Image 1 (cartoon, rainbow, N blue to C red):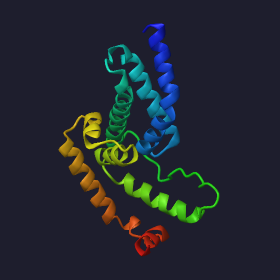
Image 2 (cartoon, helix red, strand yellow):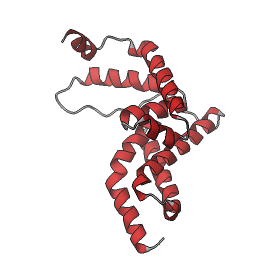
Image 3 (spheres, one colour):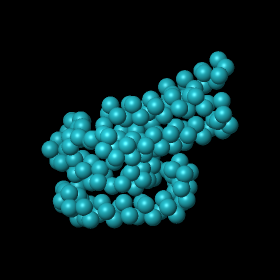
Image 4 (cartoon, one colour):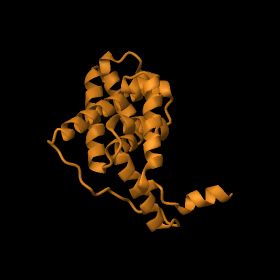
Length: 178
């Protein structure tokens, strides 16, 4: 890779790493794992940088590398080689919010997301957190847009039926009365 390409890649990493790290965190549920996942995806992208024709699609390329790398991790773990922890990392919310309530909601969501399959979780993260279209999500995951729709529908139905999320949080009650 020439010097100009290396500088372009450095600028991309410096500018987009925070957003990509948030996506990696949502895919892994752990800050250290998210950092490892992002680093691995960026390393894979760097090695293939000269072959990527559309540099404007570089972020999509990195996201896809994160999803496929994380899927490989989930498959290894499913075969019994690695074990997940029951502890979900929490960071205290910024001042002014009810920390106990916010933590309870976050914990309930993480437990529920953790029970989803790898593809369903990836679809929800890309569609609703990253706010990608069905077509963009399908492209990153290497599936048809219809698969994205069906996986999202199944995942959301699973979350709606999840007893952990059935708690009537004050935010839900306020939204229903206003």
